[in-house]
Image (cartoon, rainbow, N blue to C red; front, side):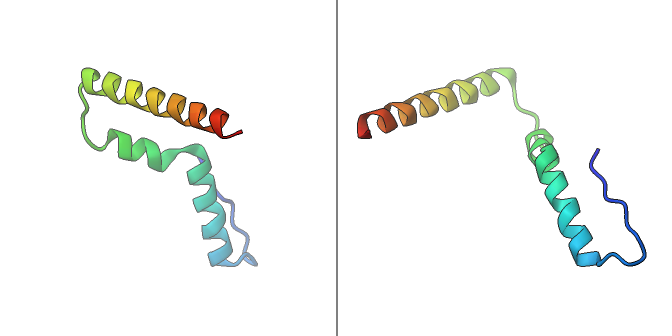
Length: 66
């Protein structure tokens, strides 16, 4: 779990920015959004396949451009 230890001399804004960066790096917000609504396993599989297809097409386009 991300956390920031504060001293008396630390600026609050800088500490908050460090905390937000740690939260984002740990993936807490993306996990929260993913768990906010229940998704059936079939829907999860469809999304996963669509994302893989999209990555593959992007990779193919990138190779053709070079």
